[in-house]
Amino acid sequence: MFIDGEWKEAENNAKFDVFNPATGEVLAQVPDGSDKDISLAIEAADRAFSSWSSLTAYQRSHYLYTAWKIMLDKKEDLARIMTQEQGKPLAAARNEVQYGADFLLWFAEEAKRVYGQTIPSARPDQRFIVLKQPVGVVGAITPWNYPVSMITRKLAPALAAGCTVVLKPAEATPLCAMEMFKIFEQAQLPPGVVNLVTTLDPKPVGAQFVSNPIIRKLTFTGSTRVGKMLAQEAAANMKRISLELGGHAPFIVYDDADPVHAAKGAVLVKFLNTGQACISPNRIFVPRHMVDAFTKEFTLRVNAMKPGNGMDKDVRIGPLVGPDAVSKVENQVKDALEKGAHLITGGKRLTDGPLEKGYFYAPTVLTHVTKEMLIYREETFGPVAAIIAYDPEDDVIEMANDTVYGLAAYVYTKSTTRAMTAFERLKFGIIGINDINPTSAAAPFGGMKDSGMGREGSKEGINEYLETKLGGFSI
Ligand code: ADP
Image 1 (cartoon, rainbow, N blue to C red):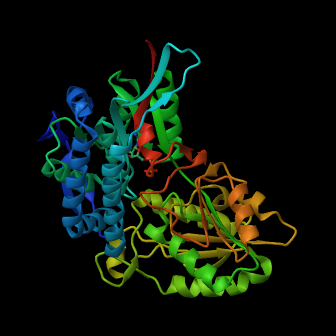
Image 2 (cartoon, helix red, strand yellow; image 1 turned 135 degrees about the vertical axis):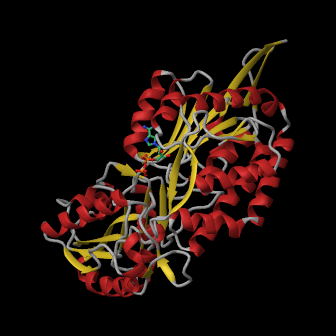
């Protein structure tokens, strides 16, 4: 763990294993922090806050630029560790490192653009000035599916704003977090500005983050279930929160779209990270008369994706994160088939040869998916594409909006009218119009409804870490 500028073991010396999901091998043992370690990290962040927040924005920006440069130098090492620990193919891991580094650069720049305001007063002897100030010590909890970029997406704006941070990464991917903290150490961030607590049991960390009076803000990316629980507890202590939770993205193909082009885009985004992304399409809506053409092209492309260990050059689809993820996918596919879905390809675990020890599930295509099926409502977080036929009389946007989630949605059409109508009517925070990658450090990322609150990245991202303070001056 990295606490107060030093690497250390857990106070009670406990450790836990980190596995390679492609091989089942133990990669390393890392400290299993407990309450005492968490308290030490929070106290270190508290001590560092006053001097870190008093630096000029230019000074803080300089640290972030330095970290950005080191991160790019270490791109290949980081990507390799990520592939081993998390499973995604090496090319995808490199993309993620780049995306992660983008946040350091973006917020190095945004640090210098934290503007206040002056406001005219109705009283001639009065002046109003608004200051933006850092909220204080931040508790950050990150997931395993994007184990590097989710760290910089939170820490870069927090540090730029002048906050200090305690991070708890997911128990499946502490090694990526440790690599990121080596970068922060090399960038010579002052002791206590960033602190890392690794632990197998996340509950005590969550409990401290929502109750310890030093923590002023909780930023969480993970499941809706845990996010809601933390939000409830944080509310009792009036902590600021931002939450990036689950999703159930619709992917709407209109009848004027080219089914081949749409299928190409749908495969790319559906199987990204083996479907383990909160912006992964979970319901693919296709006009009934186009389903065959779409499914044919889609399946051709799915069958061309080689599953396996992400370190192998040709592999396009890695393992799932663990046994529970495989069971969840199996259960959704079984349920769908029992209720009348058609299995076009996949539909089983992959256990041949070297895949036997890993958590592999075949990329799967289902058609005839209907709203009675679990997959129509529950987030899959796996490599299963659910194709739903719709008719001209159906309001497909209403069908798409019929979910508790509101993170990402995708639309394929050649009509600007349809594109604009869909963009305006879809109740999701991120809409891709003929575009399967509507994300960037410069663009606001976040969801509505059960997908969470707050935005990360963009100029909005730093606001999550700032308080507004009004000064009224009588002169
Ligand atoms: P997933 O199902 O994607 O693993 P989780 O919400 O369980 O999603 O995990 C996301 C992050 O939340 C991880 O870092 C995990 O350790 C953490 N987490 C899980 N349960 C809790 C909890 N009760 N309190 C705080 N953090 C938690």
